[in-house]
Length: 276
Image (tube, rainbow, N blue to C red):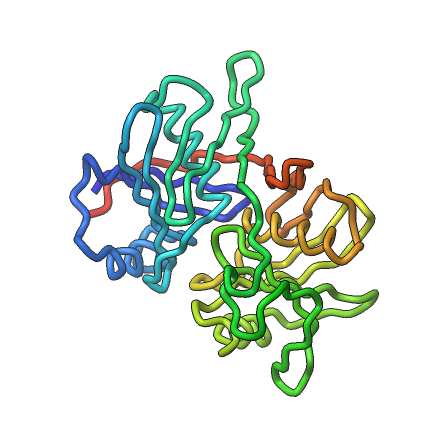
């Protein structure tokens, strides 16, 4: 199986053109093997792409535990650059269909060289049922959620996949490996959830640590950065545009006047190879 390894701020992926490579009908076990960092290639996800029409490609993302994600912002940026650099699309603008809907990334160029990728992530979903999260109808904003004997105040956002955002106070910290998995599997989230712990540095600067559903701690999460900004704006902690600092680097996120969220950041090639 021929593959390309890419990363967005250290959030790394194995990308395979499934129209050329033969994948099993259920790629879950393949994803578990490929993503293993000692016995496989090593990645935060296996991404399968296939053509769906002129300048339209389909993308599926499988987590290291074999589960399938609806969306992944960093993977989407990597796929956009992959399609552009491999000349599989006509130009820098394209449509990528995901289980969360169609996304429209644009490869940013300067003097003919790729400088990053900007993605229209669409309108965030804020109704509880759309996250999905159990409970009475309405938005989930700083709602107490009991975990390990503590009531965490959570704000729920869907960017095509579920996010549980928690804001940390001054001097407050959290052991991600202890709290993250409990929140991910909390009964309130029937499809599990990604978890973001956010520190507000300024009205236009956020610091985010992510426990990613099906992957654990990751160096970056594009949809998580978007969810963090939306939650910060909803709770009056920030404006609608901010630099989001993640362990792997920075993303620029803007919640536009049309209610669409735009994410801009890098996507880098690492290597190509053949998985035996």
